[in-house]
Length: 430
Image 1: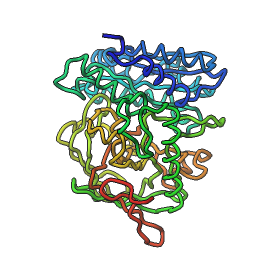
Image 2 (image 1 turned 45 degrees about the horizontal axis):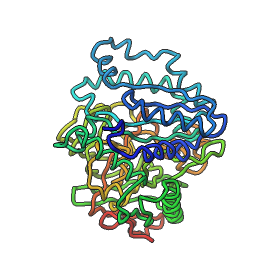
Image 3 (image 1 turned 120 degrees about the vertical axis):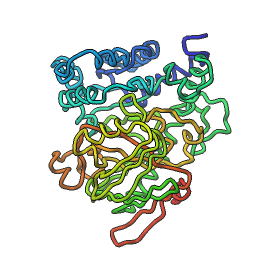
């Protein structure tokens, strides 16, 4: 078995090239920070080589290990968990302020922290968020280029493809990830919403896809809706407000110094800023939510006057409670995202147990922090100014999926006129 489980290594290298060249779009002389689980060291080396080939001044590796992290939570004091050394915080803040590009590689056991005391994890999360506040603000405002991509991991692969051997599951997950990012597909009949075959050059396919997403953003920005109404047979019946002068975004973004980058690979969504004070009704989770290594299944959120006032879950209720009680903003919405049920990832009919993929198979919302870029002049606003127009602030930004094949979304204009945006889970505007 090859080091990439029988997958054509040229396709793996093309994936690394896509992340570097289109993901963060490395510029000559730029520093790059790569955050990566230790088990993905071989893929990380491909990324490093590609960064230097693109002219990076230096590549800084930040390795993570969920096994080590669990041992930490199980053995150290609350005081240790609540303290972040200055050098660790500076490893993020320092490079973000210098305009570095940030690559985050996802790929862990989705249940690596199952049964872990959520209070201990919360202590470290709160401390870390405070320590790297400058870094978080720069990324949320897209002032620096950043991208998130994923690499298969053994327990993750077995979770997605139970009943298969480890080798078979890893190979299958590699194949599906590469298909999702439009690399090396053999079945040219499988085509995305733009009609682009997966066997095309990945960069060309992504540029065509970006054109499609930008056109949908243009259409929705012209509508200037004030509210959206969601309804489906799962029980979702929900109205969310949109802030005045909101901006729909999707696909590539532009950093503060003019570099075009792709924050998520893959991505099928377009998204904007909800009004944190206007949310009424019930949202029913269409897919399990993975939060800090635990799965939250079959959950509901009931909103009134913008915030969650009641919630249920068949599994992971304690984790859902921890999320919602993190801070006041974690009970309010920071993102509204639209994804057609017929998206390429949705058509795979696979539950990935990974938000990067599952959110691109389903319309979704995010609890927590808003993106300042999704309202006119948002990046110039202070936190207080954003709050005054309805933008949400929080230590969290957690996506959860609500889209189904029978979802209807109706846009409501200021004058009361309505437009059906989604019918039976898919776009109804052309």
